[in-house]
Structure formats: structure tokens, C-alpha cells
Length: 123
Image (cartoon, one colour):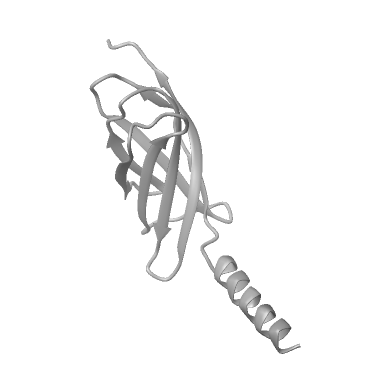
């Protein structure tokens, strides 16, 4: 009985920790086009119950889904209206994952976003 109560307490702490993380919705806002040797914009939209969120600290670690090109760390800057943006140079096109960490100083949230980077011709 005592072990059951301890286990229930531990499970309760774990569930509380998981549910208290942020409740922001994140999405890659613009199509990401690869241009060899050039930085391209990575644009993330963050909302809270459908409303844009400003003033967040947003960091992302980018890596390919199926190939090892290492990790690319990016700090996205608040451009207003829930849009966070930074230019990044990727090694190639393909399927990518952005592990996004967001905080407002009180709440923290992590989100994994999958996105496809398509090759475009240089002009």
C-alpha cells in the first residue's frame, strides 16, 4: 500500500511537470527554399489560443531527419505579430526537424517541427 502511494505521488509529479509546460502553438510560417551557399529565412509563427505572442525567447536546433549533417543552432528574433525569424545557412535541401525551445521567463515549452527544404535555382 505504501509503495502504491509513493508510485502514485511520483506519477502525479511527472504529469504535473508535463502539463505545466507552455501552451503555445508553433508552425513554420513560410516555405523554406534552399540556395547553395546562401542564408535563407527560417520563419516561425507562435500563437496562444489563436493570438500572436510577442516577447518570447526562441531557440531552435536544426537537423536533417535521415542524414547526419550535424546540428545547427539558431536564435530566432521577434519580428512582431507572433513572427520569429532568423536567416540560416543549411548544407542541403531535404527533410529537416527543428527542435524549438521557447520561454517567456515564466513558462518553457519545447516543440519538434518537421519541414521540407526545397532546392531553388540561383538567379
